[in-house]
Image (cartoon, rainbow, N blue to C red; front, side, top):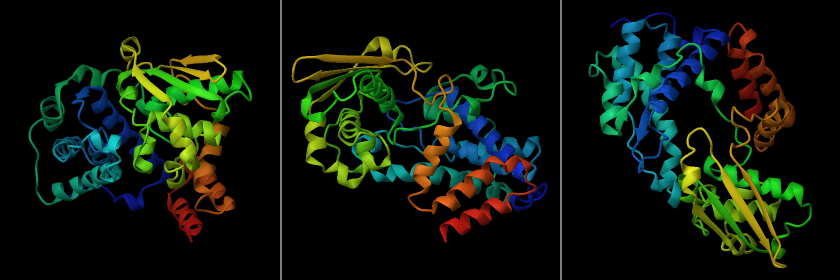
Length: 344
């Protein structure tokens, strides 16, 4: 099958944005229509489809070639285990990257003459990694509602399932300035939905496991006064004060909260002080979700806090400004040059 259109390197910034957006859109819609087996970790599943669609969009694929790419990419989906994130199995950190690699490989496979089954998406996501596939949900408001606009941004440097509790904890801290001294905390009780309640290991074995531990996330946030990336460092994972406080954090599922998924992700946090006072707050929607978005300035600050660990501040700012202007650029060469300069 001949390769249609120009290769990605010759595409404009707007073409690049369109490819990324459409790739995310199709992958997200496959996810919406699928009920993954509870033992699966979603990283490495529909990411293969995201990448395959983006590559084909950049290559100018017609409908027949795009369909072939979807059918092949579906069968390159990874069978990933949920236990990796809970136990700190760092193989988990490769899932998203490998799925992207498989999506790119899809284009070479088509070029080499490979083909997929007739409806690989419905077969794999409806009968292999899941027992159901809702095609109506996949195409609902297609082209009118963009799932990438209903995404979320993370300020807390850990698993999203921790975020509701950390948001509630922040509400308590704001309402009671100076009271959340770790030495004055008798215990912390967290009630949340089932996926969050799974994250109950108070003594994670490494940085990855720490990001999937609600007791640790609460404790390190209280001790460090922040849920930023520094609070989930190797040093924090072995900090005696953090671990002692994490041991006083309990997590349990509230079935009524689980029933609110996926539209809401609630949590209730109660901090009991050594003098017997109980401080409580609860939230229904994580901050940063499309229903409660962060202001652009806070997102920029988060970006700078991460990039400043590797790049000079001026270089990080230049990359940010170029990304924000990408849709006006004739190509993406300028962005690449700025990133290489920043890394150097």
